Image 1 (tube, rainbow, N blue to C red):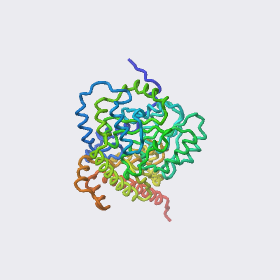
Image 2 (spheres, helix red, strand yellow):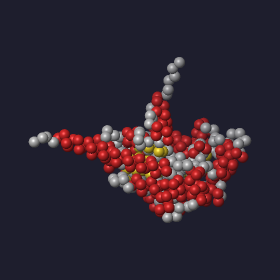
Image 3 (cartoon, rainbow, N blue to C red):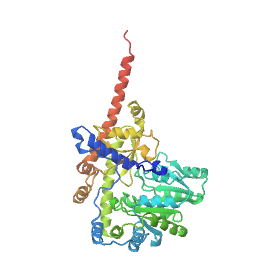
Image 4 (tube, rainbow, N blue to C red):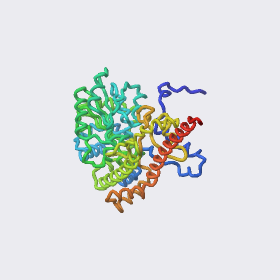
Length: 452
């Protein structure tokens, strides 16, 4: 029997992160070289390597017997804990009635895009998950390319908005940003908010990396700057290293009373409620405690050390520009100065660059620019510096915190050898690309010389 797939699904491509994962598994199993047994240096996947905090693990075990369906919007105890969490860390006094719990922020952003009519404004480069959702929902959308500083320009936002005819415009703001690791400060957010108020733009502010901000005092939520027009999403996955728990939340804007029942209807239709034991476990993660504070402090410091090393190492390659991360565990590396060399080596797209780097002898996985909603021939790449044993590194940091810059470098070399080796492979790749081009030019030059 032949089954017919809906055309809307046919038109959707596999998300880039899952596509890359499949490719890497196939590569690992078929590579003929014996040294391939270690796999590859993993700069492609954005998953915190640390253990889930023990408080959450213990709470999950304790609540494993909770088999009843939970309320659609989340159990009251969890919504109250999230409310207090936002007041304590982000200075936002949010009534629990404005909070909805879902199976990860990815799902909740999808749900928001379902109920909000209008044109989506997507700043680029962007997290690779936004565009597939927008396309799946057949939303009108426009890219908003960022400038050299890789941040939204308020003037560019205003100019784009004035060209759009839809009654409602929806700006996706990702702060701290994946893939750049950059943070919008208060002034930058206020300038963006001024345009949004002036032009009546709704904001979906994806703040899943908020707690990874290296200097946490600098983080400001867009929900605090523009509370009347911002939906804030956050969750457990990055800050608490609990992506597999699949628990996120969204804070609705002030006075968005009409939307609440519509949103609840969507959640009830699509997934009924988040797993009840997971919700009870999450309470421990969102309650204010010294244990969680210490966990945030240690993990963000380690991310900072790894990011600092990766930034300096990649920036040492002549012609390479990299964003200096303020948060997250990513940076964006710009390899476009090698464009002509890459093209001579028959590497014409960022996808081909990613495929070339994973092949022998480099074995290095990155996320190329086309996956980040950049042009196909933009040789930029997201580098995720988390390829190490998080539990071991966490304990080593507690045992001997590096104090000087030289100690921080040694900490990376001793605790993240795959990060170090992977960067060395990237350096080797581009050295070889230059040698290949130089060799090719020398051959061409010698062949053009005619004997006298």
